[in-house]
Length: 385
Image (tube, rainbow, N blue to C red; front, side, top):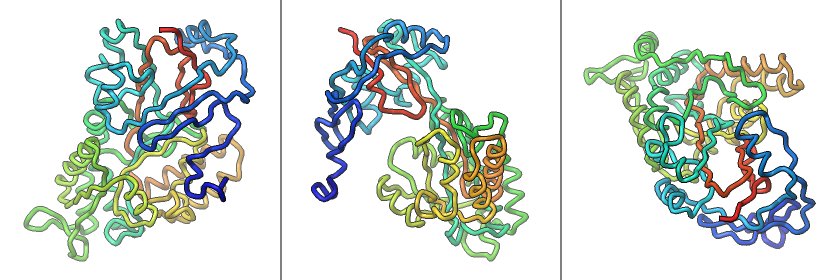
């Protein structure tokens, strides 16, 4: 395969799963067809006792799977276009675009007009988190001296996650407290971040460590050199909203923050080379263990997922010890200590955990969103319609 297809190997996958790739139109469509050689299974899952589960069991129990012969996946990057496609019944299942929240939701419930159409909704918090990172090798925001840590902590305390959830996420998120999100092994529901939104305290911190304000109200570095922080973002409107939230906080601190826009692929390449000063990102669990998130700050992975290029002997020692242990309270305590160490050094600003509202047309049967598995077609059926 590799010798034959080379760089196009990804276009010709070989596997033993329930579906085969029939056709792939890059950035447009993916067509899958049921694998006739797949072993199959009989649908026989148990209900958790919820009305949603009870209904699924009622319509799916005893069916030979997979039931769906063909799957068509539309790749629609622009939210408005995705939303129009769902409204036009071109899409059977989709996670609600954030821009549609005011139209679709009444609080966290579906509006009556969609219920009357037979549309169903399942809300699931991501097994993932969003954050902004500082490049720890950058001469302005990087480094491990007290004044550099103070600068990063002040910036973190001047960013309003409440505004992010309301304005950037349109209410479709909850605050991230630690490195590990819900539904992932090692998550501690009682954990609360030590970095809270506090503009007065952030200003006192900068004053104490010598970031003086000039006549124009903006601060300089302790040595008197200019203090200008560059943050990179993508062109999507949500990042423009995030830039406004950052700017409001930075204006109150007297810090210049310059924003530059580039596409995700180029930003990822630059981040992997430790060349971005600040960038915002997200991580969804590949597997449901906190280690999947904690490894993003492990020193030897700098430039290989560790885009903050964070190298802390204390953090790395905790990580090394934790991964040698089986799942246990002892390991969970180490996980929490790693979140505390991250807060102490502040290579990341933790933001929010996105809440996804999946909208399902009435003819789709068996839908129950899994926090990790995203290719769920083998568990579904389509009723005649």
